Length: 197
Image 1 (cartoon, one colour):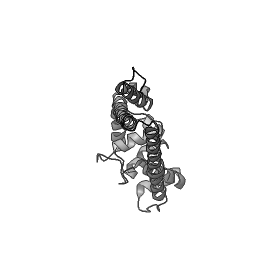
Image 2: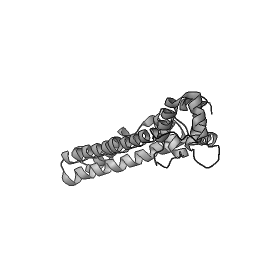
Image 3: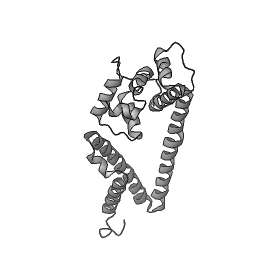
Image 4: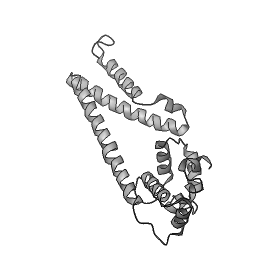
């Protein structure tokens, strides 16, 4: 950065920050939907802040190794937190809930066992609890939208609200496991259930 713009460190810091931010976002995400634009713009701002911190580390120390090491530590922590702590914990929660005994008095579960079998019910239960990120036994519109996105089903806020309303038969504002079974059960698949909504 010292040689860029005739030695203008500020210009170098600004350009490196903007380049850092641009390379850490998905430019095509800005054009998918208004909600995707907001999500990507928020990510861009976050990455501008991160890039600014790394630029300031370089300016304050004069040593390029400092921001490179800081970036590596930050990426390692982010990977550890999101993949090894959050995702692993959520998977453990879903597996534990899926293995819970089936309540013999639950008519909805028993009806779907008769139609699709216990293995299908266990898979549906695991899928439901993988989506239940706040672990309250209910799916909010946000949890549904984020989880479907991770499964490759991209819904706008309005589309996810429509899916939630379709599945939320008691109009409680969230989807419980029985409602989830009634929503995905007829097609046997969450993908098909969403597509036919």
